[in-house]
Length: 192
Length: 303
Figure 1 (cartoon, chains in turn purple, orange):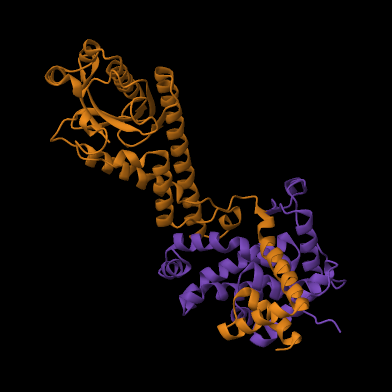
Figure 2 (cartoon, each protein chain N blue to C red):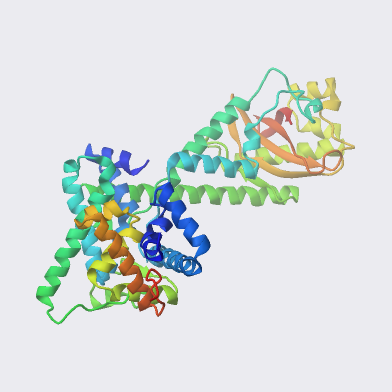
């Protein structure tokens, strides 16, 4: 079963099909939300909210083949909302929470919910994640949508509501800044 | 195209988004411009690292991908084929194949029944393993989706428990058969029939003893292990049943026991050292319980 069949079944009220869609997309949405929001708790909330909204509104999705960009759009809007709320609440700026690692003590002892995802990557991946997190919001948003969610440029444009040309140049710029954040030179810039 | 334009297009080139004409222009440029070729490699590396970063997050609640059931079924069949289980469904007609001359009871073929039994089992396994586990995250979703996911998880746990029970049962049967034969025999589940394990073990034991007698050339022992009907057939054409002179037998695989038309059936794949040392053939046994004793009612050979 592909997304299309699942979405069509879900639209007919098949909750099992929707449950499968949740499973299929959760991880990619989570990584995206995490890289945008920088907090696993906020990311989990954003993903959950996105699925809730998608569930409630799935009958408004006209073209079932557009499920993923539509879902991503919902997630991105939710992330913007969360960032907006955080700015109002925390005027001193964003805090960057490192991704949780497997060795981290269980949150249960502190009364917080259990960690939804553990970071099992290498040191190099942790560096990459930190470099990604250090980018500005727009840059990491396009990279997350493009590479974590495998969206086409056109779908990134739709999800972010910006022109495709802007997406392309923003991806190139973000890749350059990411490379610099890793101590490499920006590969897409032509040396003077 | 200038280096600047090439760099602008590299990301799309790597993603495969460019049309053929654009892509060939980029490729031509990269072939002649070392600086852009380096930029291409660096960008490709960075993009690959980013894509891999997704996998650096492990859901602590297990989040399996939902397999495509039909693809999974094919994979399962392939795996079964490698293990030789598919061989149990691949029946040659009597007289067909290298070992076909070794006998067999014409006019009665269990192949279809076995194939059906195996297919039923396959469906059960596919159904079991196609159900993925549930994220705790999604369990927080409200009813009814939350309950649909909880149902999936519940079914999945049941299926896993069933699979584990089956694995345990097969391990037990294998240990017993290995003890009887001294070979490392693979026991293949083929049936959903509820044959109790002690019956399966008794049937497998008489079959293993029968095979041992075949290779020992011990006609009398074979007849002791046979029903009167089979005794008559052995008397009529002993050469179809005797394997003396075929060297040492080694049993590779046995099915568990199924019931078909009142007979307990098991298939045995084996090889011996006479002709094709590395090829296997198969004997299909039907066993009857007379009084308290299990006796071989019929044996046919498959290539």
